[in-house]
Length: 337
Image (cartoon, rainbow, N blue to C red; front, side, top):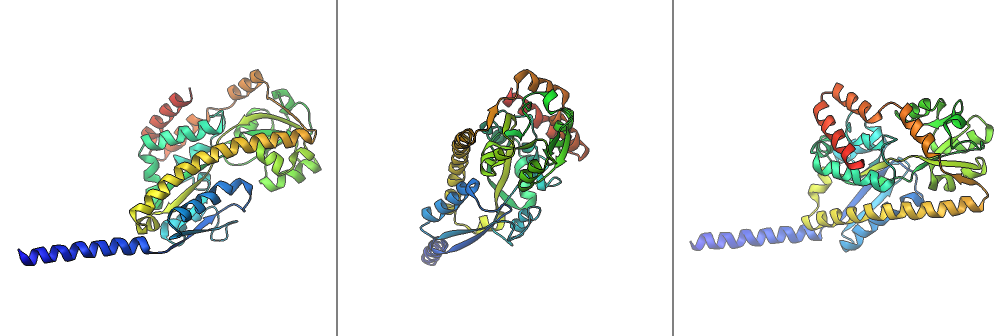
């Protein structure tokens, strides 16, 4: 009994020493980001700083922007392998691995950024398939970037009706946005964010589309005095941490990450709303005109567009996940009804 007692005390002391050592350990984490740095990412910068503050400097996060540590299509894989510790990229860049998460970027589903984020927060909590997708990539979800609602921007005055945009060349990207543009009788032109200004200036594009914050930040109102919308709302990129890195962190630090991710998610929503208000003021001072897309015309536009959510279900069904996709879509429709 004496030997067992001594052994137990030694084991407890060893465990305490290990825990103390883990808490004292310095973690220098590398965050691979696919976007260039800018004001739209200040919430993510703040998230990293909060982690450092709350861990007493024991966890330091360095964000490498503009794909410096890997392109948008590879940063999640790199995080899963432990080549980087954290990563940010849009789920649409992983169409075969993130079949369910990529649905958060389907247009014509949400009215506001808050609705988009809240809907997917609930879906991810209720349906294990969302975590399973992350598990297969060997990463852990932290938060998702909300995006401001998108507007049409161009020189033409009639961007608030279907007739006004029919036959026009309108900026597109991704798999679903060309479908809604075609449904309006317009021609989708695939362009990156940075190409829109020159395309409007040269007349090779009739209407750009961007969230209202980027309309102001990119000064699109200089070459497109008429701004109509909002016409679509969806979510942005995901922020994840590699499972290997997560398991290295002491439980107390994992708790801090979880709490600060939730706080950053709300700060992001607040920031998007405030940035939108500031953008509208900037655009107004420049003499550009913002007007709503006429509700009855927008209803016609949506009616002319294929059911994109059902299209997603059909696509996922062909990949063997049809029953889960149907249940997710059913719950999704209940949440946004």
